[in-house]
Length: 66
Image (tube, rainbow, N blue to C red):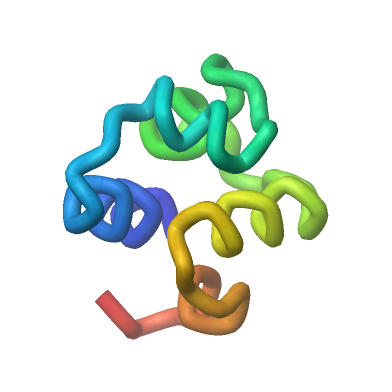
């Protein structure tokens, strides 16, 4: 999941800070999720990130879909 969030973010050419603002998720939380330090973010947090990235929650968290 961390790799996918980073991949989609980079695909949109936005920074972690910009994703933080677009998703209304703290910058530190974005960093922790992308680095793998937060392996279990809440569904609410993931949903905010998915909406900001323009992808479905399912696509963001689905195993095997790189």
